Length: 317
Image (cartoon, rainbow, N blue to C red; front, side):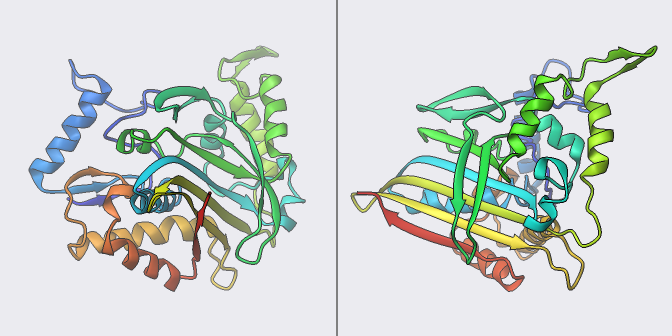
């Protein structure tokens, strides 16, 4: 049966750090298992459109389009994140508000991530390569920060020709410093510590105590931000293509921005499969599933749902 999922994992290359509940047949490595799933899906004539939400999802699709528009793409940096609206951020510690699994967010802050540097796949710590920037598009003017996290794991396999690739998570200024303090204090570790006769994993304790203070209060809304940059050569000139999005919650219908930018892309992709517009079979990442004329159709349907993605092409020389 054809399937669209919104999971972060790229099932053709399963995440070796997150295998809970995964039963790999004896004699297979994780990568072999992923290829077996892929080939089995092809043999059955079905598609698993893998990671079709916001990030992965919209981020993959826009970066993939930017790469296709280049004669030769050299670098791709995706910057994406779900953050509280500015007013809500001032009401919560860490300038953060929970819009999806907080336990998974904390996990992402602690693991290592594969990126492409100097044409090679390397492993780096999450929260590295921190970057401050001003988002000054779509009528907004905000100072934000981002740092490397997992989020688009398919890209290092589908676009290995890049010299540089990384996905970074966007947060309000001050968030990363607060998380660094929690890490330095051991409050995000998983190894249980003894406390009054109990053995408690610090991260579970932190998720419970801090998480309670990060839940939305009455009137709080969220924002999803994206700024993706592809650089390379086009028509003999060094060129960059940027993709900008600033999406706010639909307060009239009570739909968070995170729900909008995750569910709408998945629903549109599912309809595209049902109408025969995605001919590929097997495990297909968003950057390969939504391309060509379907990309234009997909983006038009995104716009019809009130999500604006601005593409800006600029010569570098």
